[in-house]
Length: 369
Ligand SMILES: Nc1ncnc2c1ncn2[C@@H]1O[C@H](COP(=O)(O)OP(=O)(O)OP(=O)(O)O)[C@@H](O)[C@H]1O
Ligand SMILES: CC(C)(CO)[C@@H](O)C(=O)[O-]
Ligand code: BAL
Figure 1 (cartoon, rainbow, N blue to C red):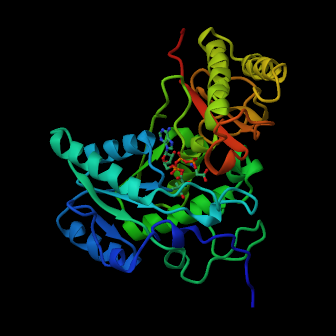
Figure 2 (figure 1 turned 180 degrees about the horizontal axis):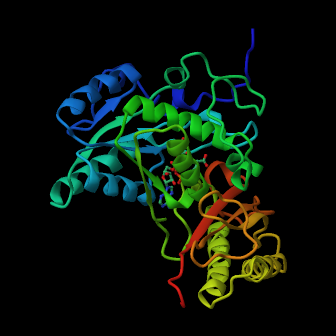
Figure 3 (figure 1 turned 60 degrees about the horizontal axis):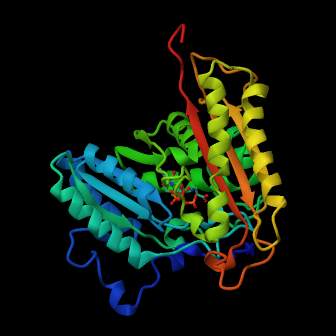
């Protein structure tokens, strides 16, 4: 029998702080937010809203909620009567040597965060709806024929979209978009949302989802919500907890690099080489400054890619078409620090290598601009 390698069936653990007592709870205490763990429970909850013509939105997440997630939920509550937030760490989108085992799981904090947000939504007259449910399935529930595995050549039922899944993020993470498209197709089929909300931070993911909706004729409206950032520009991300203080300070370099490239475009430069050179020079200069520091002060990173791409398909462009604009995006790998100072916090799980992504949309320019 085929027995795929499974490092951790994360979904079994994510909501699985479950005690026998908790297993019986079907809503967050003192709230109307239901906790749905099975496909059947979601379908039973969903059915009446087909007949009462209530708009249902879905916000897919992997938990460890931060303000970026909350901005998606706020946008969903403005536009729909019922918001369903899914919390599921989908093992299929993690490569075999990626961080599935250490991915932050903060179920209790997530429930508190959603409770507080739901109260705010209730007090704000601009919303159509509120948070109606969390969908927190197990991996057994999501993969009813058995989990197919995380290997590139795993056999199973997948949604595969090429060539977009092979570019950029997909080059570094060959199973990533297969896992994302597959789990999102399942989530859409389970929840049957009229609207779905995704973050601009994962720009290529949003382009994959747009194409999946188009090519598989899904009756779903995609909403992409702008990236929420720390005050110094770092894009919020659940993985930022791995950074620790020292790498956190330098982590803004990716955003600074993309902003330098963006300035070229604002100044009228359209040529790929010139635009990207501005970003690479920030990355190189900052790295050289860091390498000149002592081992217990410096931060090192590898640049995975800096891209200038067509917003419709994420394919590289040699010149920006000002009528179409472009997506500037990048990924860097922050390496573990060489040597810690006494008492220094290395980051969640000892501060492993952290892959950061970010992007800036270069908007189309009006003629003559
Ligand atoms: N800073 C952000 N601003 C807006 N949306 C975001 C932000 N970070 C994540 N999202 C969106 O939230 C949704 C769920 O993302 P996810 O749970 O993977 O969080 P994440 O912070 O991106 O985690 P990770 O660190 O694993 O990439 C996705 O649509 C993602 O694009
Ligand atoms: C969309 C998603 C929830 C699918 O697992 C994930 O890729 C994410 O959190 O961006
Ligand atoms: N935010 C995208 C999910 C992932 O990196 O696995």
